[in-house]
Image (cartoon, rainbow, N blue to C red; front, side, top):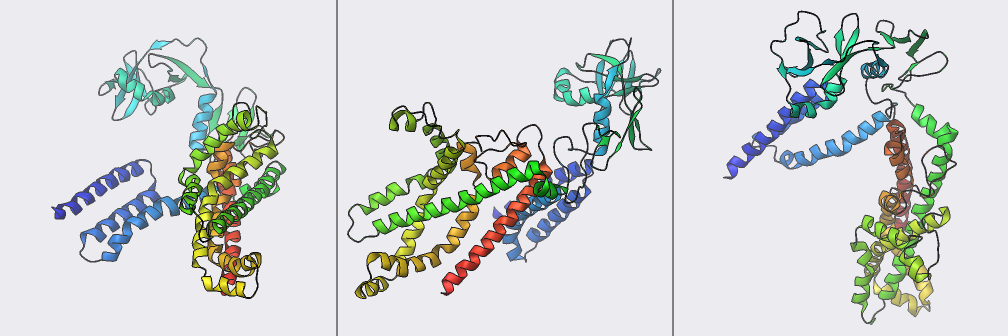
Length: 486
C-alpha cells in the first residue's frame, strides 16, 4: 500500500505544478515559470531516487521557507524601491488603456444598438446587426459571425468585468462599448495617445502629457493623468520617510512611542512576573499551585481576544470599569491620547506578565539553594540576597528571552489594532496615524488603510523597522553574552 503513496502524492504535486506553469506562461511571468519548473524537477529527482535521504526530509521545509520567508522578504525589498501603490498598480500599457477609457464620451448622435456578447476561443466580441467585432477585430461591414458562440446569461454574469472593459473598434468613428451586455453605443476618447512619442494629448486644449519619470503622464504645468504605472524609484521612499516633514514627523513620533511601549512593557512584565515568582517561591506557602494556575490564566487566553475583551471593559459609556468600578464615571480610556497609551500598555502587561512569571519561576528554581544559604550565613538580608545573588544569575538566564520579548512587543500588532485601532487619530498629521500606533500598525495603515495606499512606502518603513530591531537585538544579545560570561 505504501509503495503507491509516493507516486500518488508526486502525481498530485506535478498536476498542481503543471497547472501553475500553464498559468504563469499565460501571464508571461518567465522568472516565476523558471523557478517553479526547477522546483518541480528537483522535487521529482529527490523523491523518485533511493538516495538523498536527508534531502527528502529537508525539502518540504526548504520549499515553505522559500515561499513564505525568502520570497516575501525579497518582494518587500523590491517593492520598497518602487512607487507601487494606489494609482501605480499596473504597467504603462494598462495605465494608457485606463486613461483613454476614462476619457471616453459618447459620439454625438450615435444610435444605441442591440448587441449579443459572443465568444470564440476565449476571446469576447460583439454581434451587432449581423456583424462581429472584437478588441483585435474591428467591426467592419461584411464580417462573418461564423465560429462565434453567443454567451448565455450565466457566463455574461461571470465575465461581467471583461465585457464592460471590452472595446470594439469601429473604423473612423471610435469604438463600441456596453454597460449592460444588451445594448452598445459608439464612444470615442477625448485624449489621443501617440505610441511613438510616448505622449498623451488633449486635442481640445492642446495639452501634451509626457512621461515625467515617476510613472505618470504629466503636463508642463504639473497636472498629471491618473492612473500611473509602477516604476523603479530607487531610494525615494526612504528619503520620503526621513526627510519629508509630512512623513518624518509622524514616523519619528511613532518610533519614539514604539520604543517606549516595548521597553515599558518588557520592564513591567518582567518586574511583575519576577515579583510574583519570588512571592510564590517561598517554601511552605499553602495553595501555591492554585495561585500559579490563576496567574497563568491570561496567558492561556488568545491575545487578540483579550484585547477585544478589554476594549469592551474600557468602553467610556458602557464599559465595566467606568460603569461599575468607577460608579458611572466617564473616563475616556481609549479616546484620550495619554489614557489610550496607558490602556494599551496596561493591557499588554496583563497579557504578557504570566509568561515572565513562568520564565522567572523556572530560573529561580535553577539557582542552587546553597548560594542563598551561604549569603544568609554571611549576614545578607533578603534584599541583598536578591540584588547580589539571585538577580545577576536570573538576568543571565533570562536576557535572551527579554531581548526576544522586546522584539516581539516592538511589532505587537494585535493588541494595538484590536484595542484602539491605533487611535485616537492625530488630526494634525497629514497621514493616517494615531496616538497609540506602533510602527507595525503605521505600516499597515500606509499599505492597506485609507484611500491612498502606498505599498512601496510601507515596504520601505518595514525595512527600517527590521534594521532597528536587528540593531537592538544585536546589542541585547551581546549584553546577554557579557552577563553569562560574568
